[in-house]
Image 1 (cartoon, helix red, strand yellow):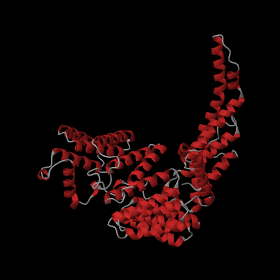
Image 2 (cartoon, one colour; image 1 turned 90 degrees about the vertical axis):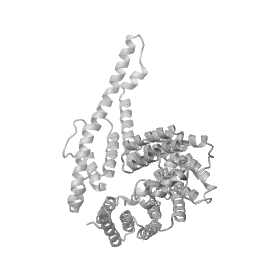
Image 3 (cartoon, one colour; image 1 turned 60 degrees about the vertical axis):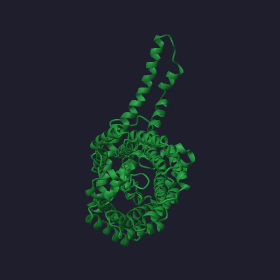
Length: 508
């Protein structure tokens, strides 16, 4: 993120018509307020986007600031001069011509165009269009930089207004010297192999969470489970059919990110299942196809396939409260979220929560699914800006994970990290620190320590926010070492960001 003052002075300089690289060919065509609105939008984008070379961070503070300032001046002058002013001039010239053209056309057919054409010819209409275009550009910039969230308008004015108020308060708290400590989640969305569940227990062979991520010594048990689920008797389990082998190859291709080959194998497996009249095999093929489409972000295709799976399950006599049905419905809610269908996603998540609530303690499978629903719903609530409710559901997810997986598990570590970063977003820095320290303690006990560096860096950033710079630097150094040791680029990047923030705060 660019430093605030470099962009601010570049914009201020342009406001007073002080040019370095390019003087605009057209100026003064429209109202000043429109140009200022576009300049503000451009400044917000330049301030928010990582447009500056990473190596500039290694320069001394003055040179770093000056380099960023020059880049900001260059971009502002060229975008305003080559985009906004020509666009505004063309709009102001086009409207009177449009009015005259309509007037000529209607006169040729013996009709008059008095009021509408006169309105188009007036200077006020051009000014209005200038205001409108600049306002739309500013709103788009505010949404793109996450100053506002326009998706919340589908829920009504009040949620949108509350979110704007929260964002303004957070911004004003950090303005102007500290632009805010960035504490990203360990990843934008927890990958399927990191969920607090496996699909084997309630949906054998689904491949959505950890089913295909078992250690090698459990592979035989997985194969037996798959054979039994597809309808093979125990006497036939040693004779893996062509269908089983094709499905396993498809899953292996998916793991290797050979998506086209995986899809070809799944279509072949589907034909085999249909030829064998194996209904369970058909359902399983459709489910894997849907997961593959979701992995490759083909959301419409994934949605249609999951709906087909759901129809086949319900058509086969399965009750809507069955864990398989809830599981597929959860995926459909997730797809709606990814498609920004906010209301539909919210209804889907709430339906899944209602269905699992009465049976969450009936089995370990139900407890696992309950935890996953709570986790995914918390991510949805974070997306729509309801941080407090997200924190409540995230705690439920962690408690469910702790009951089923145990405290010292990788999934518990990841959820504790998320609790820490979400608590920070909610303004609860003390609890955020506690959750991240507990995550580090748990992380030292798990087998896979590749993510531990990111958690150290997150804790370092929170300590920096509390004003404990020396202790923050200690955790950032440890994060960098862990990132290098386990070859985790995200840990190294987050540690470097932490060092940059420390230098910014200390004025080094």
